[in-house]
Amino acid sequence: MIFNKRGWKTVAMAGALSVALAACGSDDSETDTGDTGTDTGGGDEAAVEETYNWKFVTEEVDGQVQYEYAEQFAEKLNEKSDGAINIDVYEFGGLGSEVDQVEQLQDGLVQFAIVSPGFTGGMVEEGQVFALQFLFPNDQEKTQEILNTSEALNTQLAGMYEEHNIKPLAFFTEGAMQWTGSSPLRTPADFEGFKMRTQESPLIQESYEAYGATPEAMSWSELYTSLDRGVVDGQENPIFFIQDAAFHEVQSDMTISNHNNYVAMATVNPTFYNDLPEDVRAMIDETVEEMQPIVFDMQKEMNESLLEEIKNDTENPTEVYELTEEETAAFRELAEPVREYFRTEVVGEEGNAMLDLLEQEIAEHE
Ligand code: 6CS
Image (cartoon, rainbow, N blue to C red; front, side, top):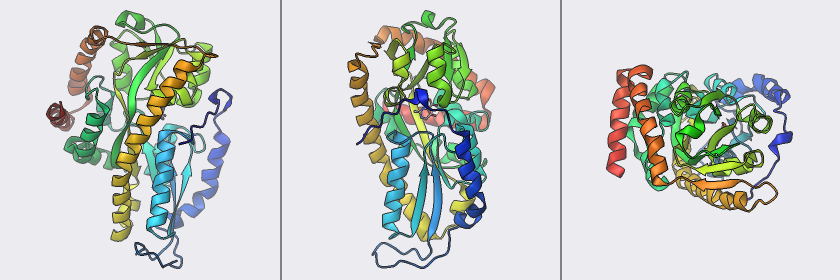
């Protein structure tokens, strides 16, 4: 595994690169259902008779979990189809913001996307269930097992996304989330007046307001600079992302809070998917399934090794502190009413039924 260290502080997110998509736009109608070409034939597994050129957009960059997922997914499908399926994988930044990317998927300009529910909460309110802190088990294996098997998520929630032209193929964890700050974050009092960067979803913001913080939504493309300049005081993310995006360089403190998991969805445009021949769909489904243990191991390895990198970065020292059980309990208590808020103010009957089932599924794993 290669961990690319890019110095995101110097990267101005390239609006210009979105021109690349616009430029490709006219071709996309052809590539949605696949360019018809000659079968390259030969491979045992390749029953695919046309050639296909698709786009897969991610919210991360080379070396990070989502991008590596998309690369391996593309490689597998290319091999399985004996070269008939070709997928261009796009790093984050090339095609606009995280929200722009979701729209491109819905419009069929890209066929596949990794989507974090944290950017779609205004659209699929029920997807904000992932913003509920301390809902899933602390144990990442158990969490991934729930994500793999949950009917509440894979049937009920997936159906709600599909109504918005987004078909979740799989849910996976990118690791437990931790807090970083320009000051220590150990008790709810430490969040009083603390400017916390969050993703767009209102329930994430509600969760930090419950701690007394002032949440501010922004794209991660602006985050390094915003932390550096004090526009915001802190943020939450899995360890691999904190290190790879170099947020620790501009934060004095990191709290191992394990307050939530970073859940992402591998998604496809449903119209595109449903129009594909059955054998091609089966190939996609098989690949999605194969990717689940691969991405789990990938995030685990990255989160573990990059924690050591943060601890050993003497040029950019970061105080790493792990919450005690007692300290965690204080946050857990404040997070509890947010679950009730989700039930009564955010979602309706369907969302409540989904959370009931999810809570039951979680309890069965604990
Ligand atoms: O904090 C964020 O917004 C970003 N974090 C991760 C782990 N992936 C992409 C996302 O946009």
